Length: 262
Image 1 (spheres, helix red, strand yellow):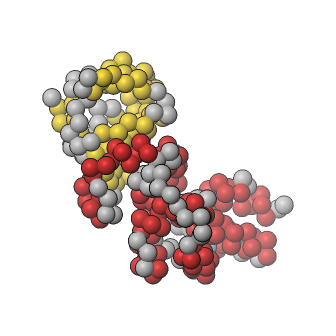
Image 2: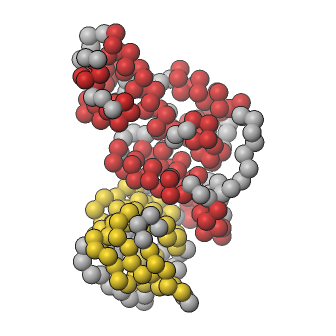
Image 3: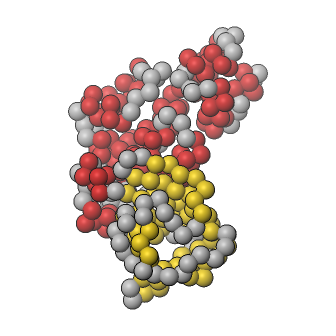
């Protein structure tokens, strides 16, 4: 039996996002690969974006289709047969350190995932973040990972005080890059708490919200100044003009120049 090390998969890895406590890989299967029994040294989950296969585990076979989410404990033995070509998987490997740092238990890894109806949505958000890949992507991905473990826990109907505090802080410091860790330290709220409930009250991730604020400020500059796109991009905290144009269009449907002419 073959043990696959971290960031190692049977298919071809075409894109990868790696941090200390987890790795995210886009893996494509365009030709036959080994159908032998194997396992992975890290906890991981896969979102099947295209294709699929027949996955065998102890005592059962599972039909895997696009949209399926597959969960694996460390060293869990399985094999994949009858792969449809091409197949594309989004794979997320999670280390023990991730669980420890965020006060999560590895013992309920699968239970947490199965109880959480938002897992597929969060995985698609992570897929989108890989395409955006800016300063905010790391925190957005981290927040999405943490929400996997929120399950169906009841959230109080009354909005917590810290929600308005975060809103004010982010609006006041719109031209800065504020990390989830910094928010947690300033508000004295655990990052898991912020990550779990941010989307409930803001209808987006932290990174998405910060981008929206910057786009709103850019709209004011576009309509009320003669500054160039490069100047506006710099003032609004975008890494460069290209990033500004892409983010602006994603949020408004217009390129900045097009919007300026409206």
